[in-house]
Image (cartoon, rainbow, N blue to C red; front, side, top):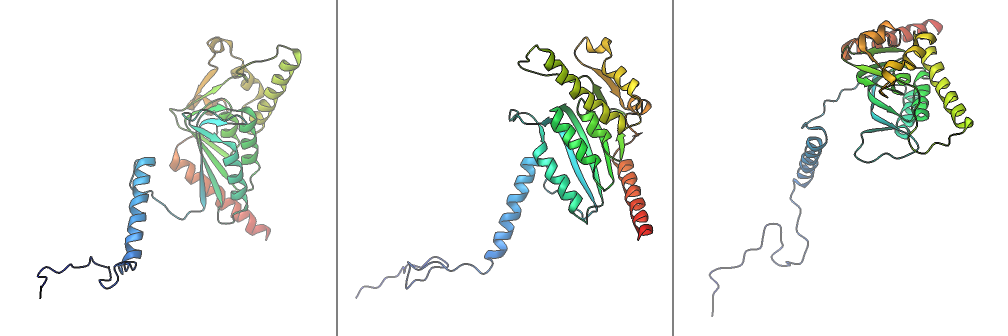
Length: 262
């Protein structure tokens, strides 16, 4: 009789009597699955945000960013940083409906973009029943100006700038009187919104808008942080801490008024 001195040992989790049977799952599989998901999330955070962990906290303030170019009806190239109005508008409706959100902070660093999309966002922000505060960081150019002034209170950091210029079109334009009339009406819509939602006078706004010395280089009037406040376009110089403090004050004031009415 032959004896096998080296018996075949089945791998862990495999039934030696029935090797075709599915392997038994280790008892700690759910724990391993959670660890794998956590590791995957960490890698994704590093790739997208350059950090292993995103600080989160339950708060009554919703932070919204308006960055890059404001995308309208035409999809911009993928290499462009964009703010898509079809993403922002549903968020604003959700903010209005959510009772846990009591205030909105807008962080702006935008070159401008589609005029109608920008005005639509600005109109929605200004019509929120909840207090809002905007901060211009880096730049709030072109149609970014109406968005900046649409908040209940606006801030700008001292190093930021805002470029103010008339509406411009790119591409083929029909050189007819009706085209120029349309542009004029569009510009008037922007003018009325900015003047009615800030302390700047219509005369000063149009002076900045049509300043020929800088417009000759096709730039527009570049207004720094201090000048923006001096002209009445923006309310205050300040950053995140000042904006958050002001927003909490506005939230508290709204609660007090609501309590008096009840």
